[in-house]
Amino acid sequence: MTHTPSSTRRPSEAGFTLLEVLLAFAILSIVTTLMTSIISENMEKAADAIDKRELREIADTIFGRILFEQTEHRNGDEGSVSVDYGQWAGLDQSRADRYSMYRWRLEKEEMVAAGTAEESDDAENLFGDKGDEEETSSAPTGEEGQQEAASIRLIRFTLTVYHQEQPNEPLATLTRYLPPPEFEGTGTGGGR
Image 1 (cartoon, rainbow, N blue to C red):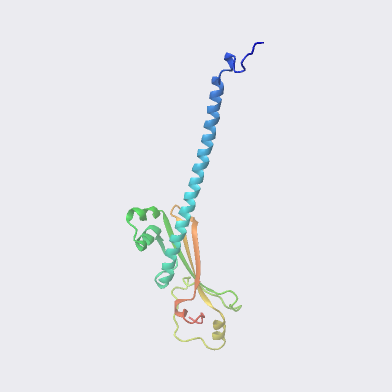
Image 2 (image 1 turned 45 degrees about the vertical axis):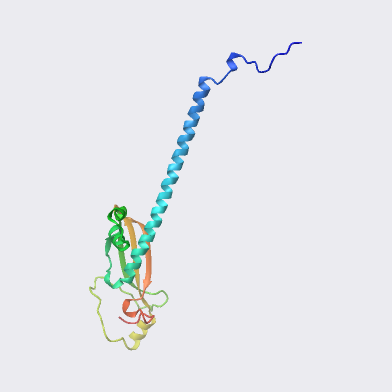
């Protein structure tokens, strides 16, 4: 009885054909290309998220400074994030330039707190067409005084941070309501 070894192969079965090798390389290159594009897209999204978080923190810092110095800022004030934040944080010029494409804008508006206004009460804009605010030293008396005492006046501060090339698309918007500076200690927004 003769025994033939099973490891004996014909020459056509000895290895991969050139076509099989090329097909494997093509599949490998397609998979590598797809993985590279997915990884780079995710890296861009992560960098974007980090930039937005940093920008939000910077906007919060600038806004806190504006609220602290609220009497020095007017409705419509604008500024550069790189200058205002860079100077405050003591950044060198190269680090501050990273934020040079971002700008901020401040809006201040006087309003009546919800639920405290009378029907006839109408909060006027601090910087409307009527010009400068009139200052009166005497408190309102009678029915007029009761109506004004019933309403609480607040100033709404809104800081918007945007890319200088897209001013109508805010990247961060912060809002805070504060009593007018002359009434901060009283807790009410009585007369002007």
